Length: 64
Length: 410
Image 1 (spheres, chains in turn green, yellow):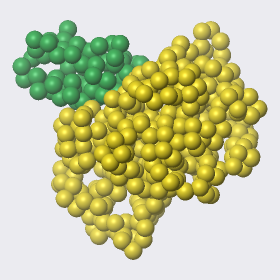
Image 2 (spheres, chains in turn brown, orange):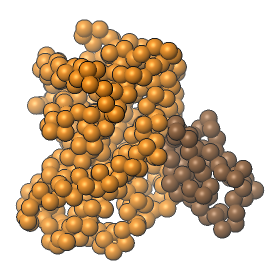
Image 3 (spheres, chains in turn cyan, green):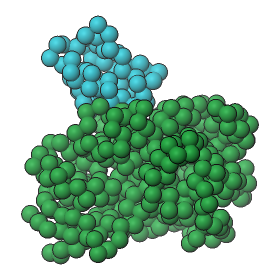
């Protein structure tokens, strides 16, 4: 699984960082970005989907 | 104070969000507008003309559309910004940047404040917030009947923001009265409001001047030293931002904590689940934020504009009820039900788009700790049915009196 934060859509709600800190980090301005080049290990796929489903701005994109 | 407009005759064509009946019955009002009246965008001639969209799709569209909708004023009042005395707020800065600012200035003013409210800067406040919560409960004494709004919820955010700004904590009542003036007394006559504004303005000047003479490690000194594009902020910008932090940081979180405790006082099963499993509190708080989102923002129509068949006029007010969007059945399963372990929760309690609540990380931390400490100290409590719960009036919704009977303490 591959994840990506759409920087244009992200408004710094920090939900992904709260729900899956292994997969996302945020900068000093609250902008989120994916860690580890967006590669999601199988055991964290549920967390990635949780982060996506909780983003108010629909800014998290999941691919294969 | 009664509204200058009189009682509401019809919520679809004559709504008044600052009538006490609105916040007290708001879920019913939105349901009726949507289901009975087939009216997803209500209108009123009050306030010189205002609109109330209630679907997630409409609220989201307006929040993202900074071209047709300006943030020049975000609290609906009797006077339109172009008529403000002594002068209209300067566009695109506004009176309380960055909430009142439009692009491109907005991004500069916001960038200045974002680092101070990032999770990594906010999380270290946790022990102090916890200490404040415990102290408030200690001060209640060994009594059975308490007011969880007056003796607990309202004091937590005001004490935190006063410390962050470097203002005297003992002036908490002054801040609260001022916030009440800005947010609740919107349909009072304007001379009364203006006179009260002047008193707080003088207080603010004294505090800011003290920081100029005695700089210290707080947000006020930070703002006084900050620069935008190589220039120090104007005194109006510094004052406006301080007002924003007070107004936005006090009533909102107070309402969020109060509504959470109101829910827990009314729902024994949910209360028991969180007492038995405090690790569930963060997910439950997100659900309280969704179901009882405190904040409705506002915009102004920039110029005459057709919004899905509604002829909006230049400088009409447009309310942005994020709480209504949060109960839209098209976006949330079982939208009317409060499900404290709801896993998928894309709620918009902190707004959508470029004006996302700057203090959301602080608000979440305060709500989580406030609920956790209250349940820890009072593992069982219920509404005290012999007294009435009262709700705030206006764009921030939460209980202002929350009579509770404590039935177990630790």
